[in-house]
Image (cartoon, rainbow, N blue to C red; front, side, top):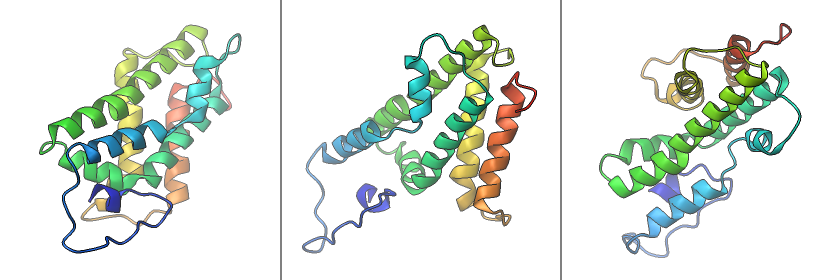
Length: 177
């Protein structure tokens, strides 16, 4: 199910026979670990930690949030599946929450703290809460709204642009953001 529900750009081969056999112990978990390791949700966020001598700006934050939104939207079926199965599969939940969600929360929190210290981002009472708010806002619009039992019709590009612009304007000290 994980392989067939993952939002991968390549078609998945049909099984050679039915019923489909249960994968070898640990195979699905290894696949999820490898998949998470391959994902680069935001190349701009990773690059921000490698640079020296230059503060981030509203444009950089816009790129980071746009990249995260696009990665979440691109992988929304897999994200929803793993989130929903986490309770039944504790080993999968541990990998998903530590390598996926918690790792992103840590990275975004560090980015916010760095930007606040540099003066390019507005101070917030708690950078962890601010980072979590950013993630949850992106996740709702990129992932969860597609399963809303009473969806409102929204152009996907307009939704992304609106969410990203609102988050950037809330955090950026750049008056032109």
